[in-house]
Image (cartoon, rainbow, N blue to C red; front, top):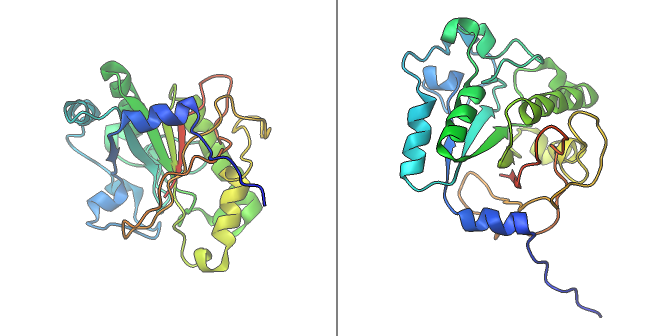
Length: 239
């Protein structure tokens, strides 16, 4: 039986590996309820940080030696840290910055000022959106959120997707939803055109909340954010 040659990383994948350290920023409605996760029912009005300074976060990450940061733009509760047009469950419905805040924009601007790459995490599981029960409707909503994040905030260094979704994991439905939106052949987020990526995709990191993860996989992935207005992210990560 013929053997397949080992799969080598693309230049973008190799650059990501050499960059080494990155820092996650995770804040949301759960922060103000003393919870790690929530079910999407926490009121957006509780998101009201009095002293939030994205500049301070990014400076600290740079001082630690990080080359990039990843902001959780939306976790499983569905609360969005940017003023998305897809839902009112966002910073726009909070008193923070008088309802005009955009934490993704603030972190993106700080990253540009200090030379760090910007990564964004967008949970496929959304416990607030009623569309989640309808795969077709939710796929459209999720892709619309990807369009906004990939076109409104400049060049992205990395995109993170998360496989958590109880009880859909056991049924396999979460896996099929991920493949439709950003897995085996994710489309361009603006045109829905599943065109080949400009940079060959990035590494996949498959793991679990227990910290048990496999080695980096250099398989080719097709990006969910190949656009003409901003370059495609260097990496696409599944947790």
